[in-house]
Image (cartoon, rainbow, N blue to C red; front, side, top):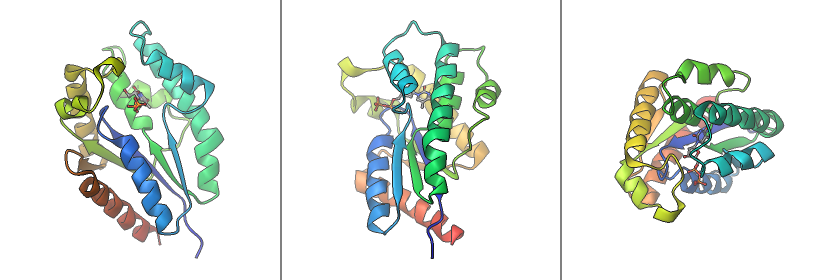
Length: 201
Ligand code: TYD
């Protein structure tokens, strides 16, 4: 039987482990014989690189951030993700649209969730979104103080965490507590994905 495509997004506050778990999940799914494409946002496009540079710059207006993330995502989806899904890959994106909905809408009273969705309406939604949930204190303890980016602040991350959790409830996303031994957290993620793959077959 031919493999079906699946688009997975891993989300969570900074330091929640989306990168670690995306890599582990890729290895696990490949060991089961699936073709897997691992990617991330900000992406590796020129816009993605600019956005990464701006993560160190508090003078970039929030609306500019939101528009640049949306542009990066548009290029990323149409030039990369869509093609891999058409080739029947499982695509794992370390962050995607939900990051913009949560982080950008919390950056300014003038930026609503609806507006972020509107500027991102030209890309497809993931088939499954998993939120890695962890206390911001624990998450920040995993980071080097000198390397902190503009969103990596305890009180901001509390708001990010709460919005992720309420969005998860509203949209039916899976929540996995990532404040545990990596292997246990990864096993929970693997189970969610294996169940989803079973539903597809
Ligand atoms: P992160 O994924 O933690 O990358 P790294 O491990 O390389 O630091 O950092 C990306 C940051 O960008 C994170 O603070 C969330 C933020 N972000 C947004 O604000 N909006 C978005 O749409 C995306 C994809 C990320």
